[in-house]
Amino acid sequence: MIKNIISPLWMFAFIAVLAFSYNARSETELSPYHTPKKVETDKTQVERIYDRAALDGVVDFQLFKDAYIAYSQTPEKKKPLLTIIDYSKPSTDKRFYVIDLAKKALMYNTYVSHGVNSGAKQATAFSNAINSRKTSLGTFVTDTTYYGSNGYSLRLDGLSRGVNDNARDRYIVVHGADYANESFIKKNGYLGRSWGCPALPEALSKEIIDTIKGGSVIYASS
Image (tube, rainbow, N blue to C red; front, side):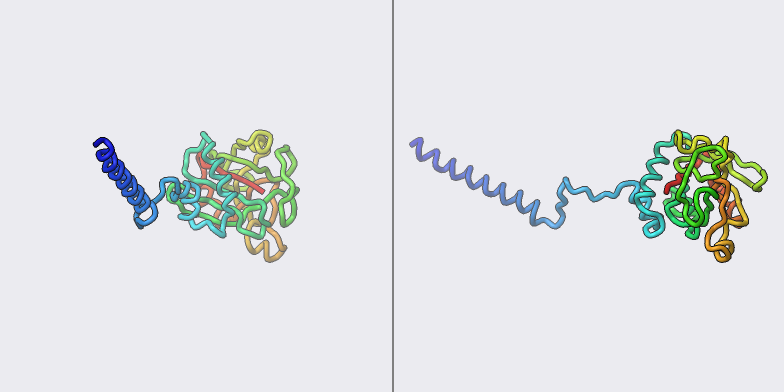
């Protein structure tokens, strides 16, 4: 009697296990609406900004990522603006980029000079030393504007210790220059050079300075 009862129960349990296995397999393998939980499809914030701002082919992705990390780690920032200077490119390229991180848009892309002692067409030497007349790399934050010997200028504070923290003492500022334009390149084969300042074309310098002044981040790399 006991044997007869156990056999149907065993058979019922076996059928239930088979049915559960089939349903589980159907849900994971056959359902077109199933997405495995382990597959991460969301892009990172860096990738989303990079794609939305259409920076592919304009700014190197790794450079943008490094610059974004530097921006994120800068407590002094007051604006969602990130300026990138790519000194790995020759001065004949437009290597100065201003990106609005909030709107995910490239605002400016133009020429920028490097220091006279950093190289001719290509910047190969960089320094934090006073009177070196070389370009400094690293993270900067913009401050206030003033009119000086180079016209309308923007003060910078270097935040990378031992790399650009002499920026104030060196008077490294953003300013316009008549040698930082395409006509100079056509005549000389390279952009004019500064004493270490990131000089911009005069036609754009005031507009750019007024945009990035007052606490935005500049990241310069080679």
